[in-house]
Amino acid sequence: MTPSSDSLLEVSNLIARRGAFEVLKALDLAVGRGTLHAVVGPNGAGKSTLVLAILGMIPFEGRVRFHFERGGRIGYVPQRLAVDRTIPLTVEDFLATSRQRLPVCLATLPTTKARIALALAKVGLSHSEKKPLASLSGGELQRVLLAHALEPLPELLVLDEPSAGLDESSGSDLDDILVEAKQNGVTTLLVSHDSEQVARLADTITQLGPSP
Image 1 (cartoon, one colour):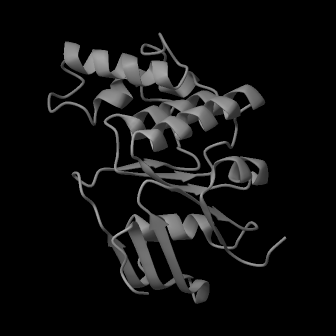
Image 2 (tube, rainbow, N blue to C red; image 1 turned 90 degrees about the horizontal axis):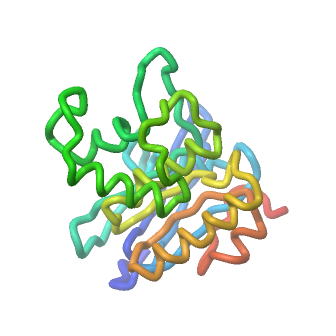
Image 3 (cartoon, rainbow, N blue to C red; image 1 turned 120 degrees about the vertical axis):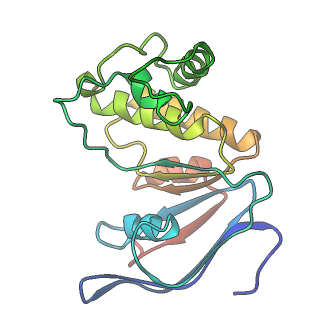
């Protein structure tokens, strides 16, 4: 694949395995700067594997190149997050861990509190700072993960099935959040099984596995 100045992310000849099985075979992909690129395909086609390879979380063959221009922050929303219900962690504690050097067990700084409140308001979770993380519904937890990914604003946003567990109203809110992120210059890689969401939002699409 020839590098393009218009691409923020380029994947070339990527091969990823699960055991001896090749989940992804010589995959090429380019994500245009400032665009929303969707990855679709049936279960088992390798969508989540692709995300993990791009983020460097699993071994792979081939090349993944980023062409960042403003710091290179990547925001990531995983498909699910396992929460240890024995740990008394609040939403504010969780979000503060990546926003200040001072350990959250000592204190959350006023500036950090303000940023967290703003981030939660953007995802429709105002006044949720003191809720135990373990008490959240699946949809609420997805919103918290989205707030974590979007503050501070990333250059690349990677989402793995972010609408999973969301009701129709929350799904509409997610669309609005992604549109606003794009307007603010965020490049997005979206893994989704929701064909209607993809049709509404995607500028470009990569199909993994057989077409439906």
